[in-house]
Length: 351
Ligand code: ADP
Ligand code: MG
Image (cartoon, rainbow, N blue to C red; front, side, top):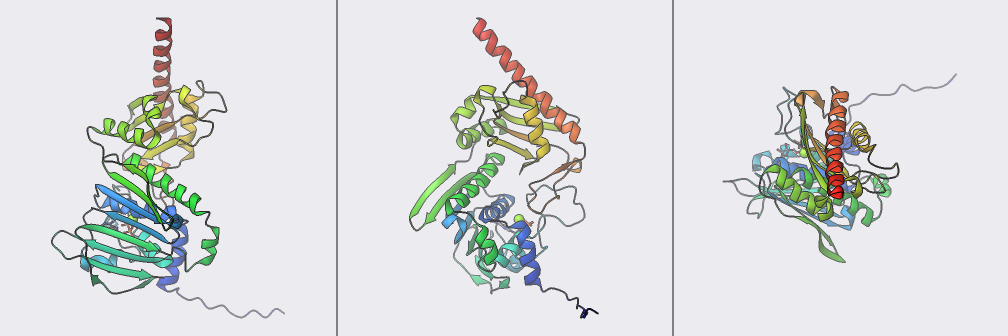
């Protein structure tokens, strides 16, 4: 005779819902940086500056020169499921990084978020959200664009705070996020600064590139992956059944001892995808020994209806309607480029 009391079902309040949801979207400072920089890109920014203190644990500040947020819309920007990027009628046709309307609400739930923004023709305003509670909109001083300042990330969720790694490791993860987005957007300038008390310095900088996309990408890859990569990279440009593959893949002689320099993008979005990484490995199979790993930055462009980006809240995973076709395209385009390069190299030697 167990004595079970009947549980009561209750609706969680918005702040609890936000904290729970934030756990999925915001795992560590680098995920917050990703969301804020993607928002800046969606706002059409040409220059983005990211200031970090203490590995992002005490401060993440993203400054952009994008279109800004109108004063009336500030509270909506930090509300859950509120977005300017889709109207909900067509989830297959998404051209922005964001569309879930969750990031700012999540950040405001797990830290102290201050938005300061100015649109053309309106005064600058700022709004602070702390632990999910909205402050009041106040006039602010800002000439244009948006500044998103996130302080004391996870102060309200000490358990999550404990799982964070050293400031150095978190800064490294932030730097990786920025470098991936910098590869995806070669025409945008990026600056990453460490503004911790003991280290005020620029740790990464990529100036906006010019020219056509292929040249701009080459220049950007030289900045992010190094001149050596750019000099050893084969241009890739292929298309099959409406799916495009562009980018650069390094010669087998320029390989690495670990799979750390493989960058894949689907419709402009950095992704980590087993299928694509497997295809890359497969393409180099005959050209590399088993302990060596290719270096490449590859961009897949396909009609939005052939790929689902809404698999995971962080949108770093994708699902293709026809994975075999994508794999086949990568393997054949890269093998072709590598075989040609090998042929050229051997004729040069023979000469
Ligand atoms: P999503 O990006 O999915 O729309 P977010 O919570 O990240 O959701 O942002 C909510 C809204 O706030 C965006 O749709 C956008 O209109 C606005 N916003 C956020 N960041 C910026 C920014 N840096 N510049 C201009 N508008 C922004
Ligand atoms: Mg967003």
